[in-house]
Amino acid sequence: MMSVSRAYAMSARARGVEQTRARIVAAARSAFVAQRYDQVTLSGVARESGVTQQTLLNHFSSKEGLFLAAVEVLGGEIRELRGEVKPADVKGCVQALMRQYEVLGDANVRLVAVADIIPVVAEIAEMARKDHRSWLESIFADILPTAPAPRRQRIAALYAVTDVGTWKLLRRDLGHSRRETTTILHSTIRSILATA
Image (tube, rainbow, N blue to C red; front, top):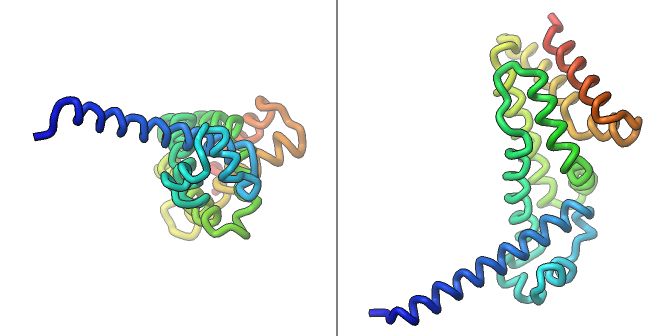
């Protein structure tokens, strides 16, 4: 039978390992949000989390593994930022997107910018596109056309107007305020849904 002191020591060690892992993931999350994927370095993340690069690699094996761990954290943040949106609630949909994009939109744009050249980023971008499409379908399911072709077209239009690229165009490139961008997205989504 294991002694109480040995069990306590093993438990404390496990907690220490988990805390180290959490520190590394937090530093990675910050790095991938602030910089393009190709600019993030393992040595920089290790330094920010107070560990050696070898310790980081012991936990995550590679930059790709570290990125995937950060993406998991960011996925939870996105769900929290979006919150619950009621069916057919255009205003709620736009508010959810604006909460997400105002916090993580620039990081999202940087990520998409390198998706064509970095396979792991391309995989995550494709998953994100599928999730976004499913999210739109779940919100507007009851008011979309039932015929397959018009339904696909309407979803594609909704996707285009709610994509982070549209947010970037309005907020960053054209300089619209958050309020103006919200109004534009709201009215455009309403127009798409009202199309015969």
